[in-house]
Structures are given as C-alpha cells and as structure tokens.
Length: 464
Image (cartoon, rainbow, N blue to C red):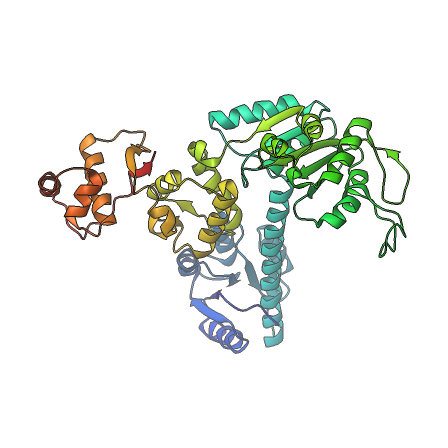
C-alpha cells in the first residue's frame, strides 16, 4: 500500500501531461498540487513543503535540474523525482547526482507513475523512522548528567575523582535526581569502562527472588529452578554493578552482600563460592543512618557501601539548571519539531519546587512535546499546580531577568498576582499582601489595573 498523507507537487509546462499525472495520482489516493513552470514550482515548494516533488527536466525558463538544485539547497532532505525524455540517460544520471531520489522516463504508464511515487514515499518513511530510532538509541546510549550550577559542578568534580578508584560508592539523593546517571558516569570514566554495567533495582524485585537475582542459582536448588541462572554479580564480572534502592534490602541479604564486598566472592543458591571481580555502586533515597538506628540496616554494610559517599542536590536547589534540562528533554521528545519554552514558561518552571526532581521535569517536557500548540511553548500550557505554585505564603520575588527590573514593575506584578489569586476581591487581596484596602486601591489606580489583565508571568513569587 502506498503511503498517504501530505501533498505531491507536480511541476510541468505541458498542461495535458500535468492533468494526466494529477488524475492518475489522485485516483491512487494522493493529494496533488500543480505548477506550470519551475519558478512557480519553487515558490509553491517554499510555501507548502510538499512531501514529494515530481518535475519534468525540460521546461521553458527554470528547468527541472535547476529547480532540483534550488530545492535541495533550500531543503536538503526534500524528496524529488524527475521526469526525463525517453533515452535521456545522461539527464537522469545528472539528476541523481544532484540529489534526486529517482527518475521516470517518458512515456510512462499509470502503474509506473504510481509505483515510482509509492517507492519514493516509502523510502522517505523508512528514513524518518531510522532517524528516530537512531536518536532514541543515541539518547539511551549516551545519557549524560546535565547541569552547570555550582552544585552540579561539584558533583561532576567528585565523579571525576571517584571514577578512577575501585572502592564502593554510595549515591544519596531524593527520587528522580539522577542517581543511575551518576553511576553510569562513574562507570564510563573509570578503568572498567570496557566491562559491563549492570543495574538492579532492589525495591522492584520480590524478596524471595532477590537473592537469586543477585547471586544466581543452580538447577534444582529450589522448586521451579529448572536451569542454572547467572546472578547480577556474575553478569557484571569485570565491570560495575549498580544496586539502586539498596536501603530496601532485607536483613538476610544485607549480610550476604557485606560478605561479597569484604571477600570479593559470592555463593549461588545450591552452588559453591567463587571469586568475583566487580565494582559496586549503590544508591538510596533513604537516610541509612536513621535506618541503622531503627535496626533496619546493618551498620557494617553501610560503612562498606559508603567508602565514597556522593550526595545529589534536589532540583529545587539548582534552579539555574532547569532551562538546560527542560530544553534537553523537549529536544528528546519533540521529534521533527523545533520546540522551545517562552521566558514566562521558564520563569514559572524555576519557581516550582519539583518534588519529583529531574524525572518529574522530564515527564512534563514529554507531555508538552506531545500537546504543544506551536513551536514556542507558552506559560498557560503548563499544569495548574505550576502556575499557582508560590502564590501563598509569599515573602520574596525571584528570577529577576538579567537585564534588570524596576521596583515599581515588581510591585505591579505582585499586586496582579494577588488579585488573580483572590478573584479580584480587593479586600482579600489586601489581606494577602498585608496592606490596607485603601493602599491597594491607590496602587490599582496608579498602575491602571483591570480584571481583564492576565496574571503577569515575567516575575513569579515563591514561598520561602
């Protein structure tokens, strides 16, 4: 089945042939647009961006090869099929060298025309899918820990210093701060970079299966063990084992993990002990010292895991990284679109506390990439919880633009936001701002504020 959708631009100075091509392609289910010469064809191409251009080579004025050259210069990925006279192999070869996808020799049948168009569009579809797949694979393979804030610069420095060591690293931080990315960076920058990186989420595996997942088992070791199973330690041999949510380990496995770290050996269920060559990096969002005091975590294991501790800051403490991260995730999920955030939208994002940290920001950018009305994402497209964040308990104004901001404008924006929050009830807005109603009325008159004005987004308020 030929691919549908989009428009095919047919450029030919022969009126009769144009009509025949249009009739045949429309019967085959395509949308067709016509141009009687090369100049008109190029203008239509710029205006409409058709999926495919079908152009005759020999035309008065701007010829087909010149049109092809212009189109490819304007849009290198444009799909062009040229129509050549019978026996004009030289023209066809030249067209291919100039970037045409294919050529069609006159005279051609309806079947030949439809087949040529169908093949070209199928090729275009495969090319797009291939690019998306490569981009997805690249983003997974080359995931990096982003951030230029002072806090993240300190983290990057620690990673560089810890990467060359063999001692265990314990990564601490709230959920969604990027602990697995830190583990990946430690692996990639260390001596074991050529070895495997194996990650296991200790909280996601049932307790009864966790020992087998970590240390492996032999066939027949327990009911249902139909074959030998290599555990994560063996899979990571020569490389790095990342134990995420290590604070969730049950007590019995804590002692076995401590033995593995101390002796560099493990014992599969039903098997014999053998040596391992693995660097262990672990992570948790729990306070393990509190867990130790409550008797839920082994102090000796904590001491062994935390030879090199590394703490990740929450996103709310490095708000200057939010624009970089937001654009990175928009680019990842926007496909062929070139999306960006307005300054007002960015200001709102930087005022939100991000309880889910970077993971929450990524999820929001994926949503915006899908639902964005235009290439510039505006503030009103953000969720209500972000738009209304910081409108109560307000004590300070943040995120002043680098070019400066007048004190009067700050006061105006604060009054506008308070009025919007209180549905333009002046009494409640005055109470919110902790000023008298007459003073608020005078400020409203001074700034000529009316209910129709939208809440200004250039300055946002946040709770302290």
